[in-house]
Amino acid sequence: MRSGRAAWYAARMWRILASILASMALAGSPGCRGDVQQCEQACRNFGNLVEGKSAETEIAAAPADQRDALRKRKAGELDHHVDVCVSKCVSGNNREVVACMIAARTAEQALGCAK
Image 1: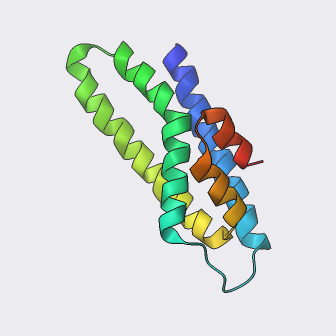
Image 2: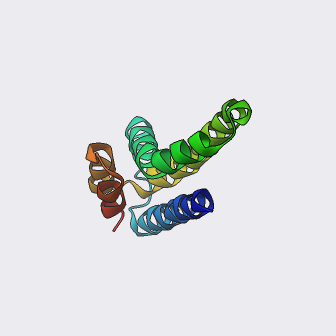
């Protein structure tokens, strides 16, 4: 039950981040684009911090023979979320949010960047 709550929470955080990045894109200057490498680093850090702990808990709770498959599935989900995040981040071109997400060392700090 706990892993279901953690997965719901992580998915909700990605939707919130995507919404914020999309609104930044609408407010940004036309023709200005963010740095793809920095956006990749920021989004991957966000994903590792926000989703990482819940994924590790879910993987550890799974039966031993299912852990590798679950780990691969979680990695694929993270990659998909990062791809979507990078796309929105590049469009948004908000250097302050990107720098904050790169510098974050906890999930709380990463979530605070998106406010």
